[in-house]
Amino acid sequence: MVGSELLCVNLAVVDFLCCVCFYPFSIISSFHHVWLGEYITCVYYGLGCYIFGLCGMFTITAISITRYMKTCNSLVYDVWLEGTNIRIACCATWLVAAVWSSFPLFGWGEYVPEPYGLSCTIAWRGYHTSAKDAFYVICSFACFTMVPVLLIVVSQCLILLKVSRFSYSLSARGIRNNLRYTEKRLSIMFFCVSLGFVIAWAPYAIVSFLFIFHQENLYMAPVGFVFPALFAKSSHVYNPFIYFYFNKTFRRELRCLLLSVWPKLGGNRVDVHITTVHQVPIHIELQERVCVQKKNFGLTRDRTRSKEKYDNTRVLGKSVYTCWGSMSKNTPKTFDKKMNKDSLPDSI
Image 1 (cartoon, one colour):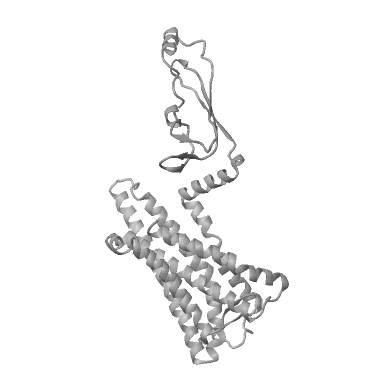
Image 2 (tube, rainbow, N blue to C red):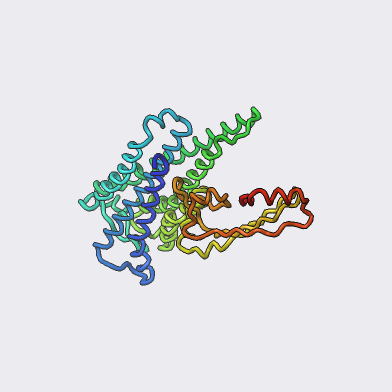
């Protein structure tokens, strides 16, 4: 697992852990209409969400830069952005996010409840309290929000420009653009992931930025803080749907996983093959709709296979039944004799 795949796994881990470890606190507090817990739980929630939020943003930035290098500067990608360097980048996203988020624990910034009182975040209003808090707030917004977003937008725009120019040049020469179809599909998928992240967090960033320069929250009702926060939290949810739509391998593996857990979801498949030459027998084949597991290639899509291939294939412990129909009366005698001499043909 190298390149963008490892970064995607890192992003999936961020989304999953953030939803499991922190969001239940906000959900339970929403039912009680007040934040449940003391200062410790507020710090835990604010620190955890800020770490995972920064890590997710840095990961998407790394994905965008990696895709840009692979699409526009393949030589740099082959030299610097493979193998160990990608693993170092994943570790760096966690390290930088954890270090910067831990500064409020040592008096440089603070974690406080948000204006609507159902979650905790950085004290953006600390801009007015002290020089240290003001510096932390400005750096958090400029260096750890605006710069990553700018890198994401610029990288994705350059990727789309490169792909469109490449497709146009091939079309102008009359060459079918099939060689880089997978590359184009991956570029669109990562563009959707990056665009969705920016769109989800943009309202919350704008509201927080306005909150910095207002000592009181009278300029906006508490409801105005709720919807941007909920919209930002949705960024952890829709990424699997983007992967499911654009990635055929993801769909196939998910289908195999579901069929391995609930085999009855697949049902049975009946294939009927009728050959038109001399009206040879009808071949009817019954096969379980489950994933086929090869010895060398792991899980693959289930297909109708010949008898020789069945010797090297196991359909998850379930047998495959083949039924043969009777021959047609109009079949020539010469063909009938030939069929008696030869063995029955393998199923198609």
